Image 1 (cartoon, rainbow, N blue to C red):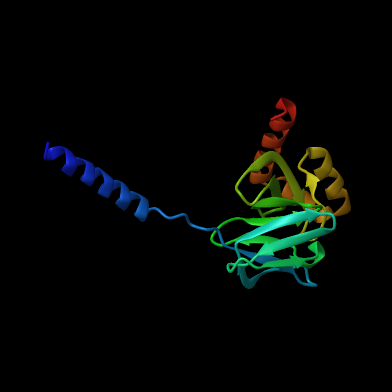
Image 2 (spheres, helix red, strand yellow):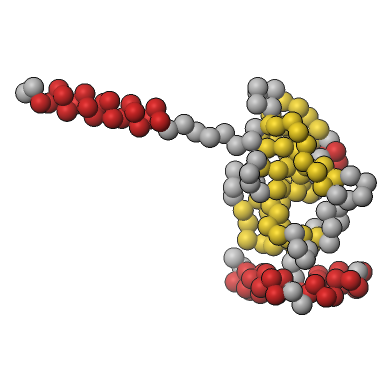
Length: 171
């Protein structure tokens, strides 16, 4: 009988220590801006979440204190997670940047980590996003002849093969 209360108290103490040692880590983000030269830079003010509102089209940023700041989408290029991925804000959605050489390669994502398999690309940080397909790359290379050498890049070929498979299987 004396052993039972001590086992229960040890179990409760163990549970308390486990739960006390576990704490949720809150993500921290910073806004990403683009200057006149097309160079991206990360802002200094941290915030803990970002939401896109459609009517009117605005970006809501929540500061660490819980205050909400509203910004027009044209003012912010995207979001940089502290020690994590960068997200571009484009036409009302976030796109995770998964590669920046030889092209900017993205996939649609939310800040919670959910992503879609469809790949997109842009020629530079301010150009339109297009689905990553051979046809769209051919069109882009006609607009920008300097793109042709990058199309031979092995990494880009691998991404195109992945995009082709996803398009054919619908996944």
